[in-house]
Image (cartoon, rainbow, N blue to C red; front, side, top):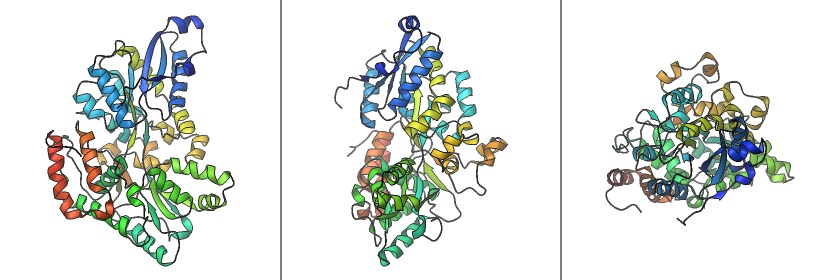
Length: 449
């Protein structure tokens, strides 16, 4: 990683409010990603004004790439850097930052507030060893997007998708299935979702025990990845496919379906409205449903993404930082992030009492809501009547996190290197290999590719 000096967005959050208050207020710096920075800076300004002069928030962009952001934060905290007070944590970083003592646990009263109003999936990503170390700001989940005219009803399983693609190839029609199969985090997300959907898990909740070989779920997932990559009519460049490549294949009419994040809807709509005739035809034919299951009748479990706000252990002003986080993730700011930045919110109320504007921008908000809620009966029993009313019965999908382990970054790099390209995967032998290599990575043994 380059020695990244953060690019300040202070100019975006200066102004408004009394000059005297702005000048005298304590500056709290937020270190966060570039994606969504405009909306985060707007929230910082609103919260600065609302603080009554107690603090002034300045948003600093950390490194561009997610891995570099993590390294930058870790190095600054280990080095004793107290120049920032709030940090944006990717959902996979919680165990590492908590275990290392880099992130402070939420105060008890704040943890209760966050728990009360936040969806179960995002809440789980901010939790380590039954303690909250972050407050979920935004989230993400993949849906299945498909062409209505090319399928006989919404595809329910991966087997349905593969069979439909081969039929369409025989008919000379769009037959590709858009997935994320390049050697990067997206392929790990694909494996994780399918393994969980088949009834397995890659690593146990303790973050230490590798469970990929405990049943046949991971083998079935890897075999399905191989079949998608080699089926008649498959994407010939699937080994290089990421979210954007899958989106483009769908938009230009080469793919009849794709698993992807909600941003693809806004992108397709924008292209259609720009006068692109092919994009217009695709958009008018575009539909969505929940993530494909491994077995019909068994709900899919879909890997969650997103960003949590946390306070570094080096902050000199943790109390004010936690107070500011409460404001940064409030309903108004999360709704603005969703409408202007395409980042689904984590607050239950924004779904159960969805505004007309939110429904227009997210016509698939019910599917997102379902996939952000756990399938655990104990958690479902705690939902209010209003919350349960938004969930279908029977359920078709639920949420799953990526392996919660302090060693997750090593695990992810290792898995991505082994499962891509998917056309070369031998499922049975690869499960055994991964079982040994992942356990070594958890134990900090061996070399990560």
